[in-house]
Image 1 (cartoon, rainbow, N blue to C red):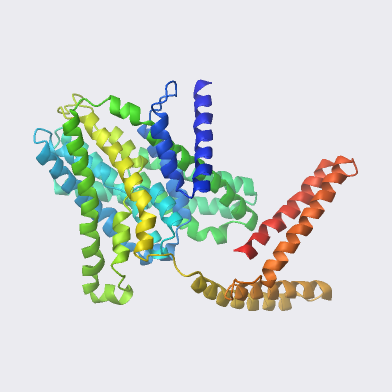
Image 2: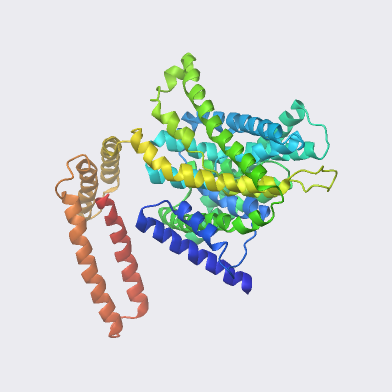
Length: 524
């Protein structure tokens, strides 16, 4: 009962914190992190211990899965080169540079342990990148690169952590061992993710009940992770592959009702998990600080060194990776040369998150299984400090930096023009289908459908015009909402007076709610 109450309290605090963040115009993860830091020292507040298994199997899979579902596969494919350079190349380089830097500062600590620390702090967080990048309003390609990096970098980092842990225990590890481990983990993850994606697609195509569609969608990431972990492959790669495939195929697999309902379910789950995750990270402060046995000066030196190397190295990597690659004709012809501000913003968007802390908790315990003595508690604290520093420093200043450098989201006018062009073609296809199938239908019905198609096409072109005055579609939406409000009021009175049963009211309200939700489109 106590654990249930604690969970409810955490969720309630997360909801209040997210609401406060929206009211103040801040990013919710930052507000919840600060709230957790403060609450960790409130007398009597429950002490939260973040289990690595809970994060890596219970929290990370659904967050990665829904992020992959929402990722555009064509955009992901076009940005695959910079994504892999960041998710694999930079993670490996960061692990080595941080590892050797810490080993230079603490020469008595085994190099394998230092490299494990480097791998732990190397990957930016998927939740942080998605939440902050979208809130800032960055260009679509930049968001794709950041999200793609965060989807894949956990896999390469966790493999390096495991290899370094094996080396720390005394096993001989060479380049061939590392390459074989990476190939096994990534290749196995690709196969398992593909198999489960294909199976889930078959189920979705067969299922007609939206509730069952939701159930299959919710179970998919956990099933993928459990099987991938049992087979000792990369569960991260498996979940991402399954999410990318199913997200790309959803329009062909699910009915409209299932898609709308599933979208609402995943939005709620993501909202709650993201909030609780950052709150839990903040609540670790008291536990992590209390376990440190290293001197304050050594702790400060190692933390400052690791944070400085992480920030500097990302800048050092980004500029050559962006511009030297364009010396290759194929890359130059395929990708436009971005202004210097773009790699600068990407370099500064290196916020770490809960995976870093969970990975730190998996470090081998000194004295067990032949593991030599090393400052494990110090490394866990450094990982925690890196999360807090990157979120509070980089996360809070990223919006200002993007505005100062002129890195803004893609023009809505370009999107509206593209949408209007496609909508015009879609309207012609719809009218052709109507003429083909209209035989025997009442003329009034055909005219009504034809008017609906023309109205939708006109609405798309209206968005290209000036927004200084109310458009016809906006006026329609405003007036129709008032009409729906009046209709809803009449139905409620009829229910209260006993003239209609509750079931009739529920059915009428659902129809009115669906129509009103469609009117929001005219306000965008």
